[in-house]
Length: 241
Image (tube, rainbow, N blue to C red; front, top):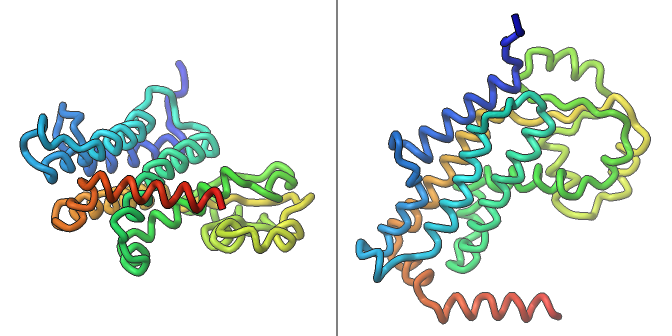
């Protein structure tokens, strides 16, 4: 008889799926998720007031939904963590564009959407590994793993959230990072608890929707084609300098 015992990665990502499904797709048998509420924020007559934000953001969150509920097993932590973090990052990049258009203050972002910044830093670690590619056979684990104490004791270098904030926010510490990782073994990549990340990420999405729903000024800015055109024109001009 085949061994059907689930490993810790499968158990954790099943719980992530439950959390994400409950918070972003709360209505059973209805795949119109949280982001579809943005349609209503711009008016009840969808043929007249239909807004592209709801569709685009719902598509992005639905990709996360399909990934978490996929039939293939989540039995490889590095693979599942990489895919999950990058899918969340793609949603956050869209939200950050909206934050820039409406001029959401940095202090407000830091206070209410700090989880987005943390996910961005982990995504930077994945996209731009820098000297990480020069270390030998790193071990990947989450901070809630039962063996975490022993794994930490055995490891010389631990890449955790504090580490990625230090070395993967800018390019200023490349030389120092090279000294830390180049030709090193016993390197431990310590991901945060993905169940908590999922909860915090979903809370951030809920706050975003409420921000748009409850702020007439932001809705007006996002409905103004001239304002949006000016934003992207200025962005293009700045990139060409």
